[in-house]
Image 1: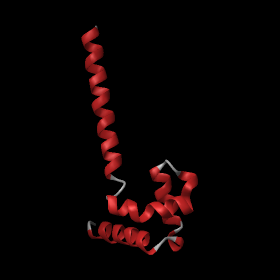
Image 2 (image 1 turned 120 degrees about the horizontal axis):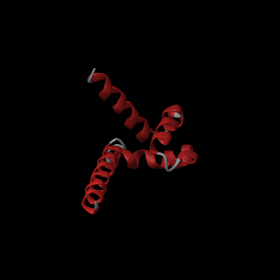
Image 3 (image 1 turned 45 degrees about the vertical axis):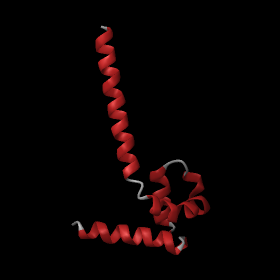
Length: 84
């Protein structure tokens, strides 16, 4: 029984680690995060620490974003359109 518990624990750790790594990949590069972090704090602090909520907020406030952060979202929009 103890071995089964250890195997189950290891599987849960691997699954959670994979989910965390996947979520981290979706948050952009270090440069993109640096460009948008000040805007996130200035415009969307109510959504921190929820990355998805912050992203939605930033997209909704696009006209208020700094030029650097606007460029991140513009680049993402053109990149995803090319993949279609």
